[in-house]
Length: 165
Ligand SMILES: CC(C)(COP(=O)(O)OP(=O)(O)OC[C@H]1O[C@@H](n2cnc3c(N)ncnc32)[C@H](O)[C@@H]1OP(=O)(O)O)[C@@H](O)C(=O)NCCC(=O)NCCS
Figure 1 (cartoon, helix red, strand yellow):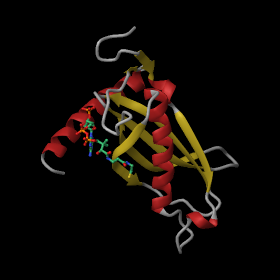
Figure 2 (tube, rainbow, N blue to C red):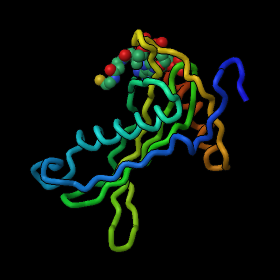
Figure 3 (cartoon, rainbow, N blue to C red):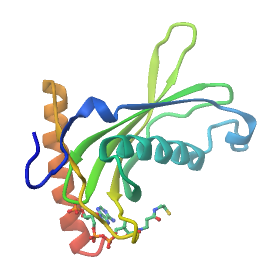
């Protein structure tokens, strides 16, 4: 179902769902054997970009990362899972949510270590923003609630940006 704003039609939230799995190695830790925050940010940026490209189908770039909360540490040899998916589509930008967990391999139990929202912008061949070709549709109540919250966050970001933050 194509409309004027989204000429290619609509994609479901699940289409963009992307997962990255890492085992924390020596090169990923700081002097206290904890996962280096910058490494986790790199991993988050990577999988969030994949989610955004899966939705948009064209080139994207990261414009901003906000609400990047480090909730709990991760340690050498821990297994880190990062799940990312598109939660909102604006004109040229998308919001991607990225949740990071440490998974206990013995039980499968997950502990959230980070929660982040990224703004990814579609760019044309000239490197300038270009409209997101696809709209977004939520397919369950949890996704619908997240999309409503994401729209509010996007509006708040525009206000903050207009104020120079
Ligand atoms: C991202 C980039 C293309 C945006 O270009 P711009 O001319 O500032 O774009 P605009 O002001 O037209 O904004 C484009 C969209 O992005 C959003 N946006 C841009 N900067 C934003 C920010 N800092 N925070 C939140 N949203 C932002 C706008 O709200 C707009 O959304 P909409 O079209 O859905 O309404 C440009 O700033 C850029 O190339 N930055 C470098 C990106 C990069 O290299 N990232 C890799 C990490 S180094």
